[in-house]
Amino acid sequence: MTEIKVAVIPGDGIGKEVCKEAIRVLNRVSELDGRMSFTFTEFPWGCQYYLETGEMMPKDGIETLKAYDAILLGAVGYPGVPDHISLRDLLLRIRHDFDEYVNLRPVKLLKGAYCPLKDTPREDIDMIFVRENSEGEYAGSGAWLYPDSEQEVVIQNGVFSRKGCERVIRYAYELARKEKKTLTSVSKGNALNYSMVFWDKIFKEVGEEYPDVETHTLLVDAASMFMVKDPKRLQVVVTSNLFGDILTDLGAAISGGMGLAAGANLNPERKFPSMFEPIHGSAPDIAGKGIANPLATIWAASQLLDFFGYEDWGAKIIACIEKMLTEKISLTPDQGGTASTEECGKALTALLG
Ligand code: NAD
Ligand code: IPM
Ligand code: MN
Image (tube, rainbow, N blue to C red):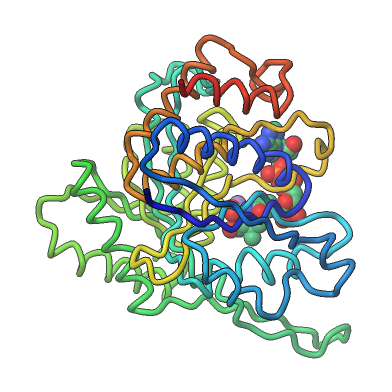
């Protein structure tokens, strides 16, 4: 029996509510399967912790997490703590320090999920975003000069290293090859004359090793337009940290909403734990009401199962989500239902068998 040690950081707002349901699902999978067992260790880190201690996590937090095989994260950020502190000191810190350089975000319109695009066949929305997740516009490099004076200047650097670009682009080529899909690189070389020209060059260079993969390149503005007007043009997509962040919220909007959007922060070499999370935030507007949709976090749990080699269970979870959506079983209000977070999570667990 393989033991998978999961560190759980429920975080803030609805993060706490949705994590519980993903844990319920993973425990049921291990009961039914018998090949693996999960242990869950919860860490109370987040904005409340910050207000009590002055830190988002303890100084040795990263060291502590190294002992785990994976991290399940709810959401981070809440009114009362500035976002640039809460996110940089916890979520972004983990992505960076654990070299989780691939952020894998499916944008797939599941059967039964609502799509606001008129006349778009369901199967046209089936993308997988490979978002660079360790540097780029999120590198945190810059300066704030002469604050509160007339000369005030801020500088936010984008950091694009050869190693950083090559490895994520190579990951995307491998994925496209494996899945027999086209690969689209999304960049913005017409305006960002250093970073994105460099990105495009590396995309071409790495591509020489993959003559069998059909490639396309799109400027990010055009890519966002095509995601709405002709989404089938995009299959595997590789892009920078910031562009990937923005485009995957657009992706969520065309594939059932934030309650159905998941992401895996992967360290493909498995030197450090990978982290699985919904892409939504703490949703202060609905936090504490018990109505948050847990399916995005449950989808992230299915990505966890895929990552550890249990793709059969990963696929089974997605099939159960589709069944709930098509038969309108225990859906939360964002999906037009009246179920609570817990009822939704329990219904999915029951469908597993
Ligand atoms: P949000 O994703 O929290 O909420 C946006 C909207 O989507 C809200 O109306 C919310 O009710 C709805 N929504 C989100 N998830 C839902 C779910 N599971 N079920 C039903 N409805 C859902 O984005 P925001 O309001 O811009 O951010 C709130 C806080 O979360 C901020 O502090 C932000 O920085 C942070 N944030 C964190 C993460 C993360 O931890 N990965 C991601 C995004 C935002
Ligand atoms: C996401 C979030 C984060 C990001 C924020 C909260 C820093 O929006 O995971 O998409 O921009 O990566
Ligand atoms: Mn985002």
